[in-house]
Length: 301
Image (cartoon, rainbow, N blue to C red; front, side, top):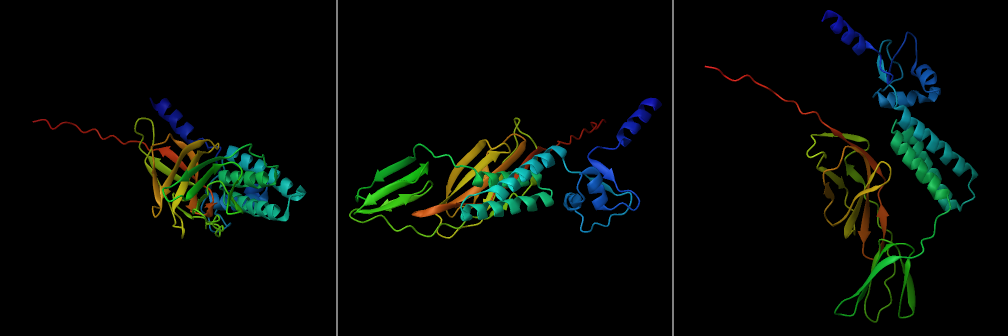
């Protein structure tokens, strides 16, 4: 038994490959250069370990970045930097891609590697040739007063003509044309909602029920003039998980229970006659929380 206890103690003392102990006179930049291959990675170590200074006492145990996530982010950043440097796209698209790349760089320095990879991929997509959809999906309805409402769901914009006036209706946009009147003049684009909770990178621990975790409530800020909000939840790999439109002024949505894993979500503000505006993307992770069982001895008399 003593040998078994010694073995357990030895195994538990074996250093983890995801941590490092700060040596004598060793700076964060030196650790970053030794283990990450880049002294600038000191900012990542600071963010990952919640440090406010790069002066760390010897013997301090530091967490290291998850290798797979960091490698993925580095690859996406390298591709985005090359795309921005070599692009011949129009200035507006190039500026949008550069801003997205800066966002990715900031996420990377803050050790938010999945967010960095997604933002960098977004920058690359902005500069890649855009596929042209072959058709649009839309709906047309006429009410008892003769007014026509056009709702476009996906694909290229649909052109609406009335009284010799034509205007495009973009995906996610709803336009009502009164009888005998030209289409309304497009309003200014909607403002994008700001996401509130869960916070970026939140790790939510929940007790599983029937193999799933939940519920989780998403919330966001109100947008003036919005008639509703389109909520989209994707897996970390980009596969659709949950989509729903809620009517304003509601600013939250309770998700159904989901399997453990990482998810990303956005909210789109919708308004009649206005181009929708989509929020920035956020990540959260659902993790199983261990259930503590308490076993008591019966009261014997």
